[in-house]
Length: 78
Ligand SMILES: [Zn+2]
Image (cartoon, rainbow, N blue to C red; front, side):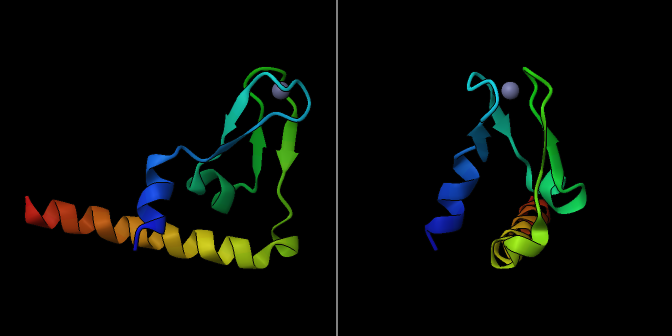
């Protein structure tokens, strides 16, 4: 399972298509709860249509749960 680890190390995000200057960091939490992110530079809001990329959302959600489980295991081992 090298994929989730790689994903966790690379901060998820994308270059703002409006100003092309700001890298918008998209957290799983934001994506799953709000479905919208705002560019920190130009303030352009981007809405993510979850219905159009259901499989991606499902994968993100699985990963989100996996991350939570890892955190829980880490806490238990301390
Ligand atoms: Zn921008």
